[in-house]
Length: 67
Ligand SMILES: [Zn+2]
Image (tube, rainbow, N blue to C red; front, side, top):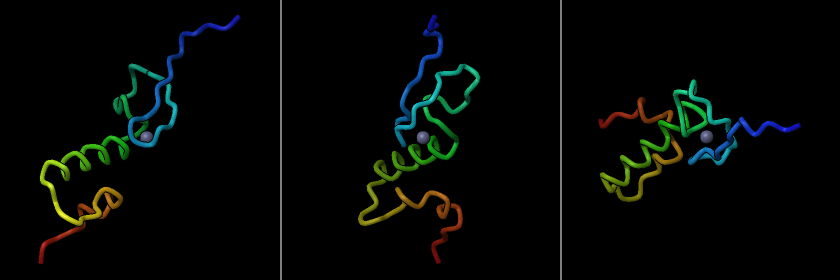
């Protein structure tokens, strides 16, 4: 018998199916990086930075400095 107790949802960012686990601190994302990626993408839209590529360059964001 199949018990449909495991609910899976697609990560909003990378679309990876993940089990909806109340112990997952990254819900509804699959990982911390996806969660941060989405927040940064949102922040970039909010600030409306023209021609920037930070959407795909999350990890370098902390390293970026405005010299
Ligand atoms: Zn993801």
